[in-house]
Length: 399
Image (cartoon, rainbow, N blue to C red):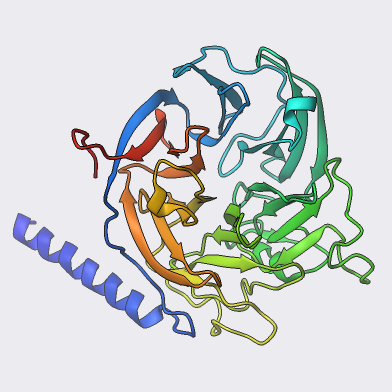
């Protein structure tokens, strides 16, 4: 076949896929957004490299950074250098597929108790779940002791997809844990497609859970005392949340989550609410089939933002630092597929005013604010990096 013939076939394929996308993309009360204009006034530098698919980063009061690697290592960055030896004492985990060592959060009184909370995939490929554990970090940050699994998500699922998971401490000392729905078709749980678990109140899959610091159930959780409902549940109807953030000004809780093909969402969370998946969604199957005819149903919450084509959103952050005064109070969402950080400008009522793109050029797994007030980004690569975004100086190079 000649080059021209091959080129024509490729172009025909692109046109057919594009038309299928246009025909199948659901419409509804929220208008999907795609590309965004570029943000300006920033520059990027590499802090450390050589991380194996890093997932989350937090900073200790000493200024050292802890970084999880998906395969099951907890790394330490000290004085801008990646310590060769990982932190010892982590439990065995399932490091395949979407599983592995995932999110990380310091106890609100870490300076007193040295407790580190983390999520990981546990079990076997045939029977696994997201798990929440904590351990006590030694003074030299070389080892975790007293490691305890505080919560094991139920029911168990087969397959290696949609573990979630993000952690978020609330001001009352409780902890939110985001959990995926169990996976794409043909994955099943209890004889039905795994995604159907997101609508079941007796299942923890496809939910945000709210726990006490010891893993027990707060008595004021929205489904406590409701017959047939799991008391750990805080919100439901989620596919696979990858970012959780609290607006320090308003106290509102935000989450981003993956759709299937398109239909990624940014949601404003309220306890006890149903966020629709898979009954109401702007997403379609990876095969271009229909997931649901509905983008909105009574009793279900509409997303604040729908991203189509997909962003594959990741870490989520409200910025309060001084490095970018004009960005204070804005929401920042990482993107694995789009390889960017999306700046989202909100008004006082939580309405989205505009979005801007900060192109990173690599899969963005986490976005955090460092102790110096700058933005930090983890890239999800075999040789992943911790990047620092700072305000562009007159002589700096940047966006």
